[in-house]
Structures are given as C-alpha cells and as structure tokens.
Amino acid sequence: MKNFFQFSERNTTWKQESIAGITTFLSMAYILVVNPVILSQTGMDKGALFTATALSAIIGSLLIGLLANYPIGIAPSMGINAFFTFTVCIGMKIPWETALAGVFIAGVLFMILSLLKIREKIINVIPKDLKHAIAGGIGFFVAFIGLKNAGIVTSDESTFVAIGNLKSAPTLLAIVGFIITIILLNKGIRGGIFYGMVLSTMIGMAFGIINTPEAIIGKIPSLEPTFGVVFENLDDIFSPKMLAVIFTFLFVAFFDTAGALIAIASQAGLMKNNEIPNAGKALLADSMSTVFGAILGTSTTASMVESSSGIAVGGRTGFTSIVISVCFIISLFFSPVLSIVTPEVTAPALIIVGAMMATEISRIQWSNLAIVIPSFITIIMMPLTFSVATGIALGFILYPISMMAMKKTREIHPIMYVLCITFIGYFIYVF
Image (cartoon, rainbow, N blue to C red; front, side, top):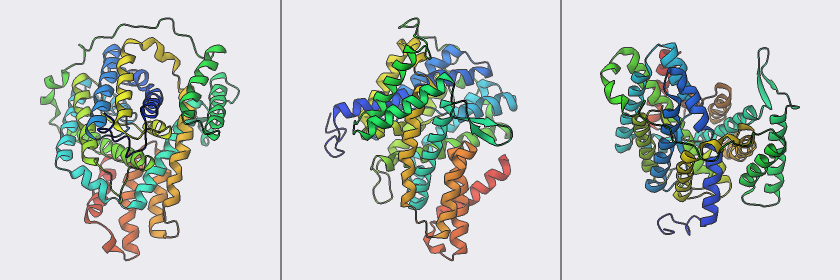
C-alpha cells in the first residue's frame, strides 16, 4: 500500500495522510448541508439530495485517489449548484430533471475530452506565471470565503463589502479559532489546522454557540426521487437554450477543476517542469464523478479548493482522498453530528490556507508588465466575481493580448490564442 501511494517518494506517513484526509473532510463537510438546501429550491427532494451529495463525494474522492494518487476531495461544486438552481431552473424555467440531464451530457463530454487528453494538454500549455496567478488567486478566493463564512466580512449596499459584527457569538468563535490555529501552527504542530477546528467546536458547544446534536446516528434518506432521472429526460436537452446551458456547465466546471488542480499540485509540490503529473487521470476521475453524480441526482462535481486545508497539514498522496471518502461514508450514518461542523468552525482553516496559497504570487515575474496585468486580473477577479473560472478566463484573454503588444508572439502557444477567442465569445454570448 505504501508503494502504491508512493509514501517514501512524497515524504509522508499513514498518520499524516489520515489527519490530512479528516481535515479536508471537515473543511468540505458543509457541502452535505448546503448543496441540498440550494438544489431543493428547484423542487428536488432534500433527503435524496443529501444522499446523492455524499455518494458523489465518496465516488469522486475514491476515483481521484486511486487513479491519480492526488490528495484531493471531489464533491458537488459550490457556484455551479447555484447556477443550476437560480439561473437554469428558476431563471430560465427549465425543469430540474432536464437540467440534470444537461449535467450528465456535460459530464460525458468531460470524459471524452479527458480520454483524448485535450484537457490535460490545455492545462500543461498554460504559462507558468498564469499558473502561479491561478494558485494565488484561489488562495485569495478561499480566504474570502472563510472571512464571509466567519461573518468577519459581510455585504453592504454602499461599499459592496464591509466589516461584519465582530461582537456576534459565531463571529467571535471564528476569531478565537483563528487565533488558536495560528498559535498551533507557529509552534510547529503539524496538525494545527485540524486541532484548531476540534478545539473551536468544543468551545462552541461549551458556550452554547454550537448546538449539541440531539442524536448521533440518523437514517440514510432514499435516493429514489432523483436516481436515474437523467435517462428519462435526455430527449429534452436538444434545444438552443439547453445547449447553451450544457456549454456553460462544461466551461465553468472545466476551469474550476483546472484551477483547483493547478493550485493544489503547486501547493503540494507535485508540479514538475510546469506540468502536473497524472493530470489526465485526475481530470478523468473528476469527469467520471460528474457523470455518476448526475445519475445519482446532483449538480456538477469538481475538485474542491478546500482540499488545500488537508495539504497544509501534510496530505501528499491519494490515501488522503481515500480517508476523505471513508469520512463521507461514515457521514451517511452520522448526519446529525454534521450540524456541529458549522461555517464558523471551518472559516479559520480556509483563511489560513488561503494565506498559504497566496504565497504563490511571489513566483510571478512582477517586473514584466506583459505578465503583471493578466496575472493581477486573474488573481483579483476570482474573489470579486466569486468565480475561479471567470478569473481564469479573463487572464487567458489578456495574456495573449499583452504578449502580442510586447511583440512576444513566439512565446505564446497556439492553444492560448484559441482559448482567448473562445472566452471572448463566451462573455459576449453569456453576458
């Protein structure tokens, strides 16, 4: 087993990988609660959504751990689930059954692109400076999510964002957890992020901020309302409106996953010569999980940026993903306990991990203006648009333009020109 996961080559241990897997699970466990809440607004059964969310995370994490040996958790993607609900189903008035069929088709197209190694080729030709910008931008994005979840940053009509109510109990819990985690990390405690979440949870329950669960074990909800519905609605997807929806699912998920994979591989020190080893297998695992997820009854899955929290405590191999998968299996039976893993508990981990990931920007050539502008736009637009894919797309548009202005066209791979034109067309059509 150690040889299979390359423990020696990646300088890791069973304990280190296990703590990493549990840490990542706790950081992304909110998806089991949030995803059903968002998707149920389309009329889907909330109980079936809980089970579908857990099963898709189990399958996806297992696949990427075993096929690609990456320490990544896969689950239904935040952002895409909101697009599925509010734009496609509610805004465009497309039935959730048809929208789910669209997710299935997008997943199949993902698989084809992955098997043909087109996705892998695109990721590998991305200039290294843009890769650093993507990794750093995701760091800012992750930290922004953490600050938002903690209530430290809130929305404001006048200034868009503002400081939150720092006197509220949940926000104070997040701040205390943040300080505890910083102290643990600065003392060199390797599992500091994980232990910080555990201590925050205990403090929250002690002061009544987090409710003690009324039960430990809960019944697994039936999948019957959503399982296999996609196969009954494939005839409904061949309309201009639905084809546009499928393209959007394809576009957003493609670059959300590409961004997460680049960031995580860079953070874990797995990137070699500006290329990601086993990228094709990782992308295939991701696309397969989307197909399975649609069949089970949930929106597009993706590599979760919260995986960076597990990498921060030492996760380096696919065994971390196996542990994540096992945790999701257990969660099926212990759903009442998940109520104690609140956004305020995981917020400190996301803020600190975001800070760690943001160090990638130091590797960008800041003295080169042709690189600075597209890199900066990539970084800043991820948190400002609340979308990894949008930040990447804007960077890909500006990079070839900047390089051409500097008469450095020979340094641009032809695929980058194709992507630039594609993204311009995408923004014109969608917005």
